[in-house]
Length: 470
Image (cartoon, rainbow, N blue to C red):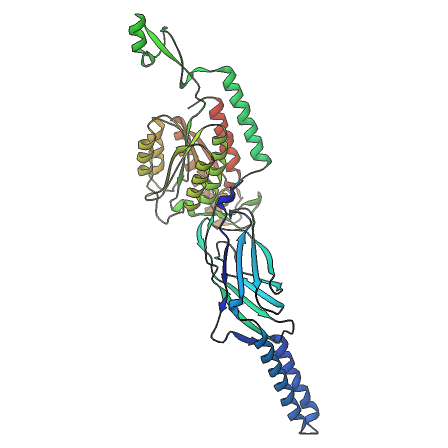
């Protein structure tokens, strides 16, 4: 769950007149004015009925003017906006709008909240009744579409009396910065991974697997076959015989999450409803899915006692967070993931590799989420991955494109479909070959559709932890 401190703050402000006059007729008034034309029907026989129509319209206009003058000034309305929870992808956020009426009339208000398209596709008109000296509220739900910081706009208010002949136009400067976070997975599926993590931790505590990790456990006499690098020379000098260090599996290991924010991660992915078509549900970028996976892995790793760091990069390093633990560190990681954005240029993978080797000299587990560029030469990201394998355990995740896989599996019915299927199959074969060569060098490789990415990565992480590979 997201901590309450991540919620956008509540804002309130007095309304101000929207236009110079800030006053207008309602549809009710216009309807009554049009009803005056009924007097023209008997006017064909008696011309004096035209004066009756003019008198009727004048009466309606005077009543509307009187009704409008009774309405309180815009400054006597205090508007407010509050959020029930932090805005995040994949979940609805409830927004509460309020109007405090400091006038003397009961007001029928119509509200339009100006939110950016990243939060709501199209603003809707909300209605509420504001009684004098009473705070009236109305709620509605939105589902954000993009991560990052977004500026909200003004709240536009139209209000009228119960008579409803005239209305005033006002607006309130409820501007604020709202941060949209990656999707958080908190449910039965997450509880299953947490339970498995507890079981693995208990098994490691009982077995105390010596020699697999690098956490010092005890000293003992040197035996044939022991690594010479493990000899403790100070103890050897004291005892007059070779003494070697004995290690056990580390209970706390550094985990680095490396996210590619280059142009390939800007691709939108529409989830497939079945094997024959791509779903019509709103699509998300590959980077959004990567951030969701990063949050899920961070939650599980921190619960398991490991330290988690983050490196998000494009042509330059966007976000960098050294490994740490605790709820405050998780919040900082989520904040960093919310600000990671996909760039239009190719990411500099070798710069990210050099930065990571400098920040993490000791052996660690690295989750690298990226995609493979289609080029005649070997992609640069493969060269960077091979450099990391010299020191670290690498879990290399390439994000597949469901649409391409669907084209490759479709049986062509004409010449154009045949060429498309051939190209898709060639792309898939090249990806498979590159990942196979990387696997031969010792990397753990996954070629995943975004919809199955979270569960596959969490399972792989628990496998690495269970086998004490770091």
